[in-house]
Image (cartoon, rainbow, N blue to C red; front, side, top):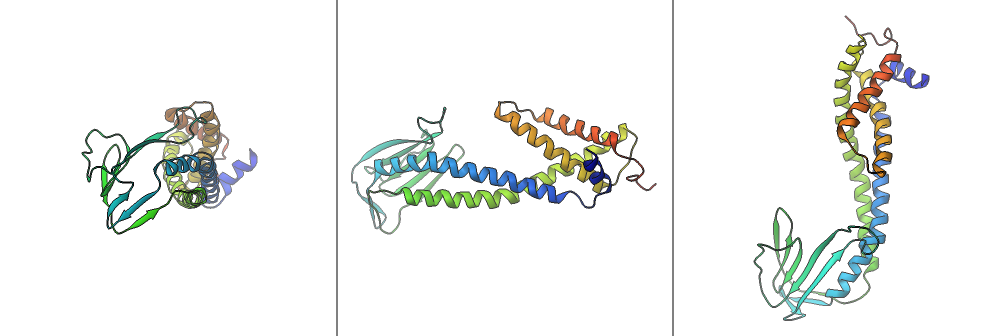
Length: 246
């Protein structure tokens, strides 16, 4: 505790090195989770979907194989492995050129001339072009490659995104610390408040992450926990070293 107090009261900077390290750890955690979920759930489900729909041949923007065919498949991530596994619909109907998308469930719909991507808020239509052939076969290596690229994206983008998000949140808590320090009639410069808020936020985040594994989550209690931790530290902080100029 003494080392923490000394760092907050006498340290330099805003505590960004801790925030960067924490953002990196969280990003790596999500990347590992993406890798595990992708290899265990996405790849088998994607291969099953490929087995159900392939081969597909497109010539000059028209599906020629299979012709006049209707196939439906429910893509399930973690089927038989995860309770309430996420799923969406895959449909191929080469008996028609287009579809009326009103009332369609979320999913992918392939007609003779177009691919429909139906989401809750919007529907996108991609007209088929040129010529392509997708033979039936083992695509697991391709799907694993997709997962690996997703892991890289989640890791890199996640690191940047988490750092920006956490930095904004810490600024918010540093501002809130003015209320906490006023209770103890102490004044500090903003750099000290940032160091304090960074450590308080990280510590609280770690605890609530563990609690989340047991189903507990509350934004209000999280906020109060950070403020309580700030109060605990401010109570022990020497006022003279951090005394703001009058």
